[in-house]
Image 1 (tube, rainbow, N blue to C red):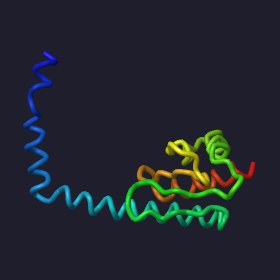
Image 2 (image 1 turned 90 degrees about the vertical axis):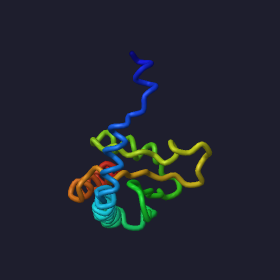
Image 3 (image 1 turned 135 degrees about the vertical axis):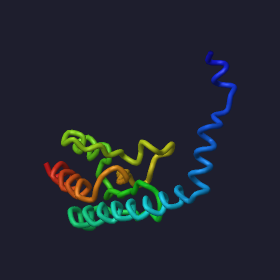
Image 4 (image 1 turned 60 degrees about the vertical axis):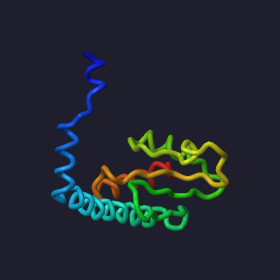
Length: 132
């Protein structure tokens, strides 16, 4: 049975997707999501700037669903991520995404799945976690 499933193309799904795109639904979805992600990105940037000031160097992405905040020299991204985890936050050290050692370490923030309010609250929690 598996061999039969693997050898046939999902024509019905492909036809539905083709119609979805041809009717402009995909383009409309992309426009909507760009605005939503921009709002969330900006809320995260504002919250990081408000809570951390110039202690973090936030790289503002033109696109995507993540941003990088570079830490000051001597500050451990792994340590910050562990402190954040103890407070219920999931933040990745940038060094975990690199094959080579980084000159400066940073944190990778995802913002696509959280509302602006959730992002602001998360940054406040992060600030408390880093201080404690």
